[in-house]
Length: 249
Image 1 (spheres, rainbow, N blue to C red):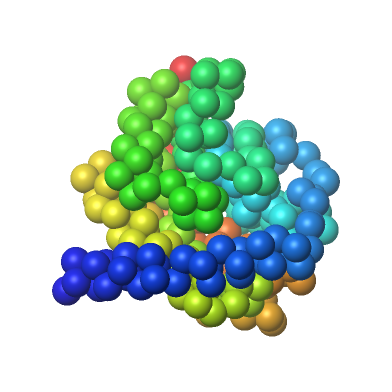
Image 2 (image 1 turned 45 degrees about the vertical axis):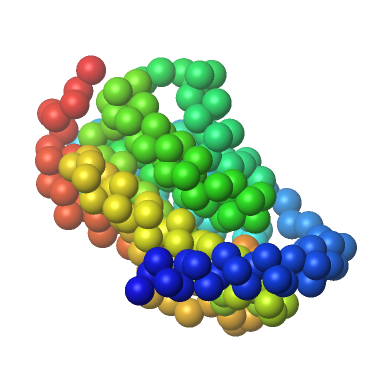
């Protein structure tokens, strides 16, 4: 059934191409440019066994849509974890980043051992028309390198958001990008399923003007809160991550 849907989607995308290109131009013109919020991206917080955390990703990982890192994914996640562990955290995220960009960063990041790596990628791969095959290869390569190069004991992979709910996007562009994001997400889930160190993080939260940022494209505080809580539950459920001995240098 999914193959049939994908075939119809590809055909529709070709037929709609002139409309989609025109809408994409209009969206870029009217989009509000929001900055990455200020706040520490590296530090230590909390009490308890040591937990080394690395967050990698795009503008959503960087916290675009809120006023300070304390309200973004990093701040809300470390707030959850800090009551259970001494969290040493590092955030490497840039607006517009694709999976290929993060792979390039791994060559320049200071190597170290991380208990948990959180990834937030995919929206820019969709909007910048990265092919599904390339996306799959890059995501697989990313997870393999995080395990081999950074000793990641658990990789928490954020699922792609439902782009067909982004208020900024008009139809049919919203439908096309939403369908592609869903395709990418299905394949991402399959990649994660065969890697014991990887787990998907999802939130069951509809997106609209009430919980998205004012640009209609990035999360607002409520979405970041739900996302951080979902990731925190995954991490805290793995007691080996918090025993203070596994994976010590």
